[in-house]
Image (cartoon, rainbow, N blue to C red; front, side):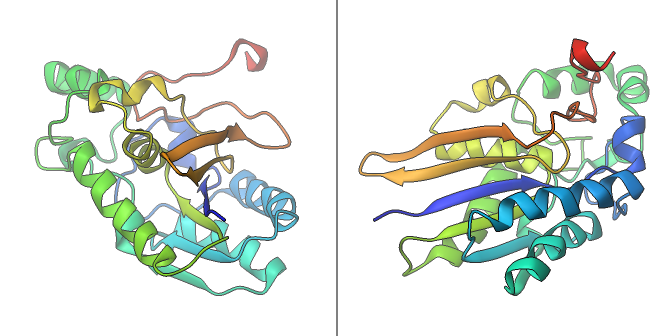
Length: 220
């Protein structure tokens, strides 16, 4: 028997499209994001999740509720699943942060584990707090499908830590599109990646850590 963790990124926000660093800023879903959440929830409901936890920020809570309403589960919200605190970078676009704080921003984009926006969080801190929430939800349980409704940066930190990659290599894990998900599962040797950036309809990856936007050629 084993547990599975499904890391589900929230639906689209206007700040995602504008490539603004959201961090702890409580930005709601836009209309596209609401539709994405509802659509993805119908797919995820068929996987028969057993537990749902969520970041306490509105964009994640709304996304989680779309699934909870379909499967009759309660959502446990926690600050531990928030996006990276972006410090002085929050609310600014990737271009603005490159212009205002080029060296620090590029070093952070390249994977160095220093505080985002000078006063924000390290990736290692984000991973530790998010995995704490996951471990608490799964404590004493087996054969669970835990849906973790969270944010793109947080999901990547969790994946990097659980898959035991060096922090400098967490960037090799591609970003999650809005309302898309990844699944990891336990086995006797630890965690392994089952599925990544899954969704029934391909979506561009907006707000790639609020650096340069990563948009696939097929959407240009």
